[in-house]
Length: 208
Image (cartoon, rainbow, N blue to C red; front, side, top):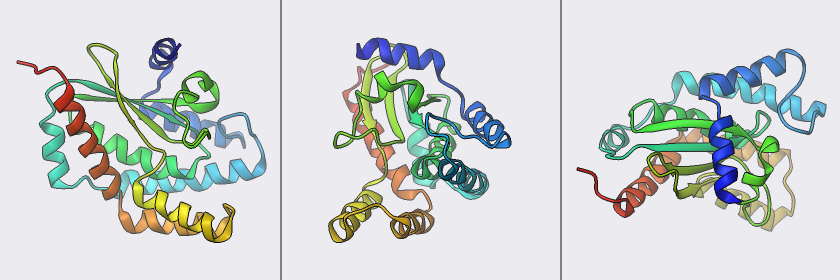
């Protein structure tokens, strides 16, 4: 079942540019992606559009991570499950994209969660369909090597701590989370993903 879900998602996967266009075109019609078409979700998607535009311009990959990306020996697909209204996805997809364009060894493909629930349900976080989820696939074999998400460790700790204290996700938490991302500048995500890629490479068959 998982192999089928992966294969279907790879066929349906969008480039980052196409993903951004789909989200933008829907916003122009007053809509967002996914099943929930509430005003709240559309509002989040509008905020995310502005965030992604800013990150596309300003977010920088560290020199160390550029070197590590250029050192990749095998080809991989980063298959990402996302939606336009998701605040974490808006912060992280621009990072994934900037990393992927540095090296020909990585191809980024994005699919929408609500259109790929069979795939999503293989990658639940504490039983929930949390996104974004990045699945690392060996391009030659289509084997799943690892997965990452829905957010970097520091952001996850912030949420866990807040929930323990206040018991609910509210607007204050959402603001604190966005501030965390702003101060972090995408560095935690880069480092965690590159460390994971190094582990994947060590497990992969050696290429000549």
